[in-house]
Image (cartoon, rainbow, N blue to C red):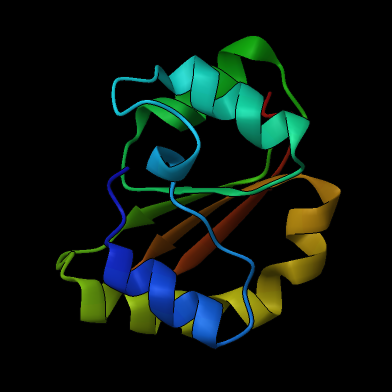
Length: 115
């Protein structure tokens, strides 16, 4: 919900199968509902909301993979550029089940489930 439609469109143009949650769920969908949809459809959640990491950790889940953006600037151009820099290197880890935190100059990867 908190990723710009511009970012989604550019990721699609670059070959990433990307959807906005609001295309499939109501705008008031809970974080748990979003995680369940992602698990069911084998998708990766990309968010700026820190709650998702906590929910994955507390639930002991090994899916869905999660990308949390912790950027100092969150305009669509910056978010898109950073995602396109990092995603090609994360494909296998995301398939295996991981939580990725993308910062301005660093990327952290934790295998799921988070302990």
